[in-house]
Length: 297
Length: 291
Image 1 (tube, rainbow over the protein chains, first blue to last red):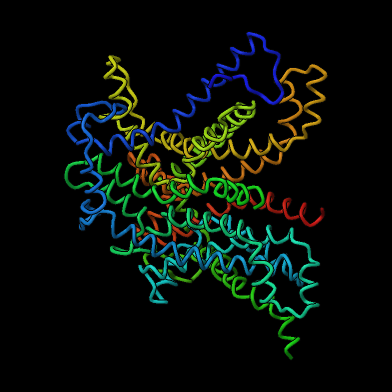
Image 2: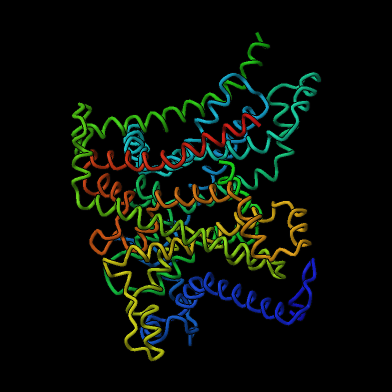
């Protein structure tokens, strides 16, 4: 912290520049506080007793730390008539996200491989059509999808939700892999073909081993999307199969009994932990997915 | 025979996804468009009746509020998030020492579910125990900040929470853009003694036009799709004051049992997205194919 004026192109060390530098750092710190404040408030509120919340201040640290709210949020809070906490819904989300992420990533990898390296007439049109599918407001497919799931006997089930997430995820996953594979020289495929390798062999032995970074980006992107999804979850689930975001909303907006703010906050943090965890430990890939998904698509 | 099969294999691999997109995206849009032209209520009917649903939609005060809110919310959200994102990116571009850590802090809200964001802000903005009570506790007895329960101001709380969630992402986009500007030009300008603010306003920012467009598209898209945040933060209330087209559509589809209204409101959302995204996608794909 001693060398605040550190810079690659050292500014002329005038006093005015130093002051400006300080102002800059103070502003940056204030913004950091602004972004951190809600998280801070959530954590401290979740560790307070209801009594302390009513009498104390929003931004005060807890006088007495208690984990009761966390216990209630995990295994006792009411989502409507049931009072089992978030626990079953957390596992619902896991059961939903794991197959949906795996399937949509695999399909996206194969699609991207075809579109980038096995061009045929119409492949670009197909790609454009898929790309546009990423942008539709999902409201426009909710009604027919609800009917279709009903006809298929998947209404209100986790496999039904997996199906929906895979279908509407492949646009993005295809985009990710296509943009990654397009930079691999076509000569590679040609040479492999000369050596007698077939379509799947080339994918399996040449492309997949090169794909680790884009697989990580895609898995993180899909996981974040699916874990945080609410619209599909609330539209296509029923009591017992709801994902965690729907259960969280039910806990927070249930009108029965005393409003337990500490439980609400603990529940919100529990719902946020998996994606926050991914962000903290693989932030680089998370950001790459965000920018790839927006700049290129 | 095997050679033929080998040649068809790429098409066969892509075919299921292609069919899925045709049916579940385009076919479903077609279904919704069709039903929006019928008198469907609780169950879909397929007899076309013209634009009755759209007439009803535009005559509905609730839709009027929802559609108006989309513009109030959308414009404020996009403008504030872009300005804030740009300012943060420029500040972070000054060879800041702990840039990585600061960036991580600014961007983490993007990893959260909108439901989590809504829950957190609902608590912070709650007049009885949140910011209002805290500031009053500091001795400012007349301080009032009850936007979240005030029908005239509740929509602005959605803006506050949405900006908090997305501005860090805009910052990341702009920062990447700032970094991609040719160093040589900037150095040349510095040698010529051009002040930093002029370098930004006349050289760097104009060269980032494509990034502004991308950021705009992403934010506009987020604004139109906003659903979870409203549900978690205000539930569309007080009254219908924070309804957006997305919540209107959901209410019609799943609690009012009015499929016709749900379909027609979804089609309007689609049309809004269309007018924003299609020109962009078209220019992107053209640029890609021609260069």
